[in-house]
Length: 341
Image (tube, rainbow, N blue to C red; front, side):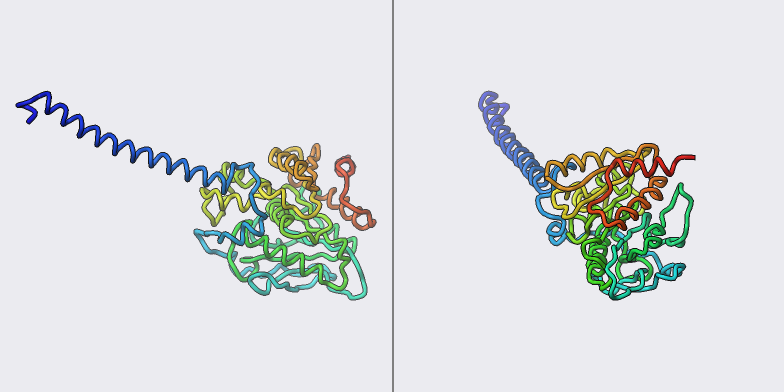
């Protein structure tokens, strides 16, 4: 037809192409629209990396089951041996059942301050947890033992033969909250002087726990990670059992996303030798929400040297019966005094 009547043929081909182009355009617009709708939906659900989560951490986790690409524990390594006469092996009831722990012996008739401590690293309670250590890296709980406090060291899921697997800042936080509730029920603990503390990865866990329990009189995080997205962008810890490409998995492990829901006073402490930008950002957010969270960056200290003098200060402060947590000035003074030759 085209060869016999070029004009008519051109018109027919034009109509055909118009139809084809119209369909293609509609499909393209539909895809783009769908993508934008999905993107906006995901943004509303997840938000930007610094956007507060729309519901509490407890609610968010009740609506999501973490997806783990590997299910591993830390083997059959037993709890470390007891090296202090006031300590004993014990247990507490966690979401997965009975969980092992090391704690002060319970002495009825007393009402003492209690410290629940979560160690740094991965794998549980380290050997030497109650021993004296050099000032440049003292990760022990010696200062609190020396003051006669009730000390509770919970092993969480996947550690020291406990049920469950390593979830990396997820179910471990639920276990930690259960340990706090267990300590609050002890007959020798002053319920108004229960403190939850942790260093490094343990500091991240206690930050998350502060959004899930109102029992502690104070939560102290030594160098935890407020923003897990920041950690992931740097390659992570190398042990993550979840997909670091999943925004929801990362967000539900990021304390800063749940600053609004923190239920107790929080003190974040780090040495000036380490990046504190994420902690400062979390502090600014806390101010906006009226949340009691303070960040203290100790001049001249690093992630480890800050521990011994500040733990000593915390022990003295709590033991004296003072309310609240030490001031930024008192923390800096304690470090300066210890650093003098």
